[in-house]
Length: 326
Length: 308
View 1 (cartoon, one colour):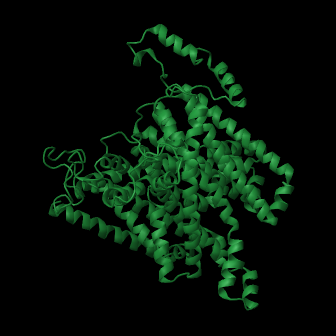
View 2 (view 1 turned 120 degrees about the horizontal axis):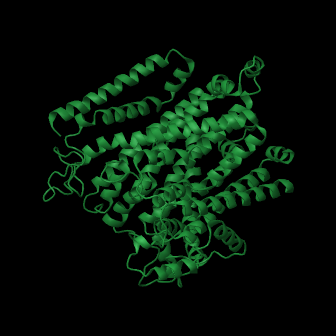
View 3 (view 1 turned 30 degrees about the vertical axis):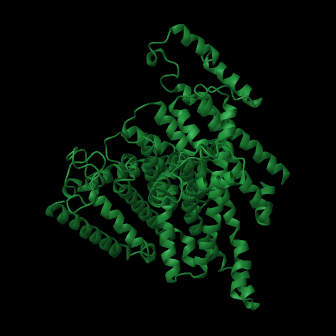
């Protein structure tokens, strides 16, 4: 088991390294550069030379790469071209924002999704199941950012019940330092979290319904029923506990979904997180921020998978035996 | 909308019904076909798909205006839906319905073609890895691990933004090239079990080359997961294209992809919600239909379900 975990961690680090390397060479291979003379004709060539020297862009590419990797292993992410601050600072500010958004979205996703899935499975093929199933399928098929726009239109624009964007009120709560400001933050968080959470919940519900229906046909469920247990107990204890196993995979898969969705949802709601940072950095050719963002996002994805695998092994003895043998 | 547009639209709906009916009759001949249509959402999903494909093909007939035509820039911006402009007009005074109809060509086309690229590569890589095993398998699957660790939209944004304005065929290729990882895993798993079966061993014993064994004996039997992931993949690509276009980095404006239309209408969402709402609804409907058909296909083609 421990050998297996160590191997998985090593593989994960190798994957992150590969993503960073790919990103590094991809952005440098792209035509143009952030400080090209032709898009800044009024600048003295000597100034450009100086800037290039400052950021190490005058070095040969392999050397730049080795330099970058050495710095990263020492926790240094170099300086952003456009933001006039270290990349680590910008990332450290953006990550908690995305993380909180993802957490709130996951909370909605899993509570609503699980409840719906279980309810649908218990009422299989009744009108309620069919209607909810179609609604879930529809919501799951929406472009996430479009749902965000519709929610914005209805709840922020027409009903004025929620703010149209941002993370906090810039006048009263420039920094979260009081209970009222925490509420203000939650108020700002609601619509983006709902957007991501509802689309996810629709998928979770579909998944969980199928998992429940697969388990309910197993023999130990028949045994439980034969013992004379109440139907509620059979479903919510005997069936649910086993149907939660495949759910663990979903936890791992939710990470990339939330990150991908967050890129667009953060744009719609002007949420200053990783997605916005990365999109802006790509547009501005801010190389260090792009590679930094690639490092962080791929780490999160790999970590999500790793956690799911470990949880799986902990929760399901059958996997553990196989995993130890492999 | 004039009377002929309505007639053409009605014709498309009737034709779509006929197509679904014909498909149902032909499917009745096989067990998996019957299982497919027993799925309650299969026939409606197929109808929606057939309808939008027909609208795309017959766009000049069902659309009253050219998608780029600015009908009256001074007086007809953000006109609410009416009998003349059934889905309203957008901020640039273009007929939203006409753009939705022509946009079906672009959105569906990109979805189908990019998926074709992705599934072809995914099947080839998965079959190669599963068939040859050992270092080939290890190398390809590590590559897949890396591909899956990078959020697809980041990779696409990087390519699209850094290489500047890229043409639609290149966009299709790039979307396809970033979408084959999951398919290849599925196909590999299938091939791993198929390669030990007697008919594959027999083909090898007869001296068939690996390429022939894979193409003629292994892949046709691994068709089920490939078809299902293709159906689900089109929807995924359409959502991605919409997202990219929304960020201004997908199909170049003024071409009417559905994602572009949401981006165009977004700024005037408060006064003219229809110009961003209807294209989004169109995407949701088509993706929903694709998911429904994909689900039904999975149930119909998965032999393990037969026992249940």
